[in-house]
Length: 262
Image (cartoon, rainbow, N blue to C red):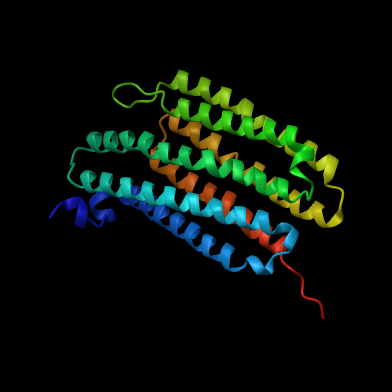
């Protein structure tokens, strides 16, 4: 039987930090699985005008959960090979080479989930999408620009899988242009349509949480470029994804569910 079919990693065979990364990937995937089930079973508890936003948060979790299933599977196979490598330098090389591959799954996830997350926030404004089509389209294009240029930056690699730091940082700076457009557009929409008291709290909480914690990703991007252990970056991204997807979904539910009256 193949080792990769039966291998269960432990800290003794692969090291503590890789084990924590593997743990984080699996737990994050399970969180998204739980979020998906929660969203679709609690839909009747949400106010009718906010049910589309609630459903979108479930779709986001479904896509992210599938991406994390792929990531943990690839990482587990890498750990199975890592357990057979003794030389510390070769072990670091193997983990470094695995990072760009796993990053591809992340960017595929983000290409779908980040625009859906932005649409979720826009739905909280309770205005026709047709009436705000221009700023929303601009924001979604900027988001896609941010993801694609960030992906190109992550793929600035030499033949030995070492990051080409200068090129990666340049593409990161280009990606930041798209990132800056997103909060600017959300702020303009809030100023224009967020005057209703019931709306003020929902939109503001979800938007501020999202924009604030999206900052985790450029930090991780820079850390991966300057040679910080990629396991640290993976764990940070797992935490960021849970906050930005499950945390936002929880805020959305708490601020939009039906209030029982006595």
